[in-house]
Image (cartoon, rainbow, N blue to C red; front, side, top):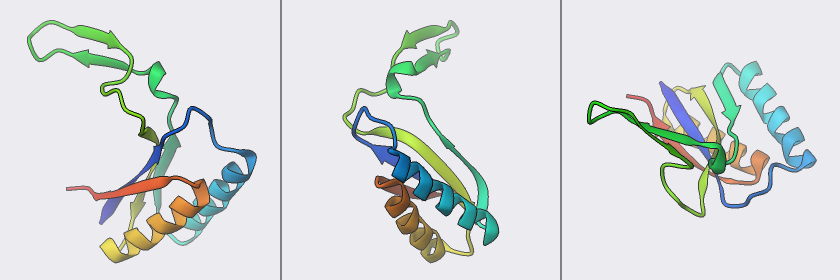
Length: 107
């Protein structure tokens, strides 16, 4: 089963060199142990653009969808046998990036 591990951040700063190094080690472990599907870091929320075409015409808004102190800073998509494994890996990822994470299964 695949899981999304979302990295939640609440500061304007990027990862420190030490955090980047720990994330690289964690990423390598995910690859080596066969859990890796995809991962990526995201630019700050002020770089976002929201597009809403539900009413038949495009409405383009600069800035994030939601103003919040916390925001999505990055993510991992992993393949794990079950939720217990995903939660264990998420705990390791949280330690590596020094941030809170959220785990959600794909449907």
